[in-house]
Length: 279
Image (tube, rainbow, N blue to C red; front, side):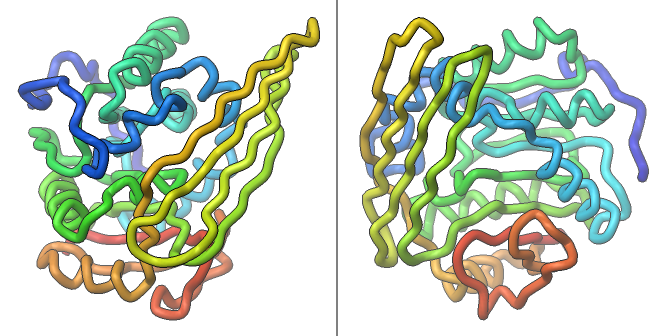
């Protein structure tokens, strides 16, 4: 696989948003108002599982659809869970997220681990501008669904197209419209997180709820729960969005993190990995 020599991200120019102010609920930044996204330590306890399976899948996608990759951009990067694993494998990786606490936490994590080839910035994935051209971009854990309107999603895809080199790919980890319920348990340093995330169904903008119960080794319990607006995108809407961006095309769609389970996006349901390519 092609991996370019890593460069110090601070030596290159990045054009961050002019302001770090939060946008109002109902915008692409609406999820920033949810308590979960202001608690990076608790977020990591719930969502900090090992990303190796995901990263190995994306590496296969890079090889198959982009002739390899060395420079990667993550949209809605959160605390940098995926970025850490990519940086450890030698990629130069940068990310943007609207949550200031999450970005600060990610930066501290990179510094603590000595990952100078990873950097995170505060930015709105609905409208951003970058100078370097990336080989690949990622948007994981259904983060694309924080884009609540067709206008925001179209603007986002146009920005991604501008950020990618020709032949580069954009991988979207997306849960399509319909009822969805996810339950999992994660343990970090003896702290056990019992997690549930639910969407009751429907299309368009819907309320999704979460309940995270944290149990410390000494028996201390903390509960973090809430709801937030998310967009339940249908496969038809995704196809129409991509068709509306001249420089992007649907390259593939997969079920799970398995390149052997390729499906047609028009017939897909549930959680899928949509791969777009810049033409």
